[in-house]
Length: 173
Image (cartoon, rainbow, N blue to C red):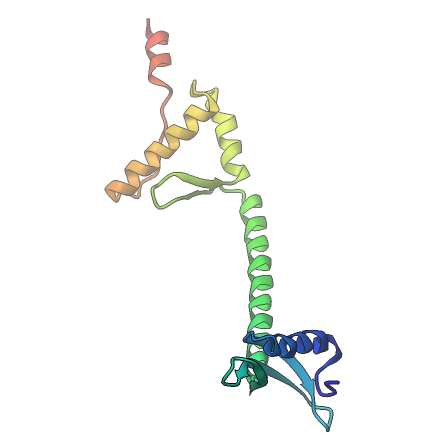
């Protein structure tokens, strides 16, 4: 019935035409095959045409060849997929480097809160928390506090954490 319309779009195309003859406007994007076997994308809009009594007597269909647009959309999707895969790959590489760096690394948010830290940072906190009489959470917060102060003051010197003050006072008694 619609020899140029690809088989997978024939039912949709038939329903578009039938709906126009029922008095409904519609639109469909579909693919056709020309006489030479070339495939083209069309976007077709239909409107019913009525006589003076309001009866549908014909249909007006306007089609636009959107093959270039569909091709550009497909190329854009492919480029986005390549970029997504590359981004994922680079993110994974960076995560691996971050995870296995022997130096402690802390990544901060814009508001200077800890976004992420690596295993080496955890190891330092684990090693020194008890020695400095802090819990691991307290030492982490103390380090963060010192970092924030240095950043806000533009001070680039190293951070030194002393023993917890309450424990020092207990020891001197």
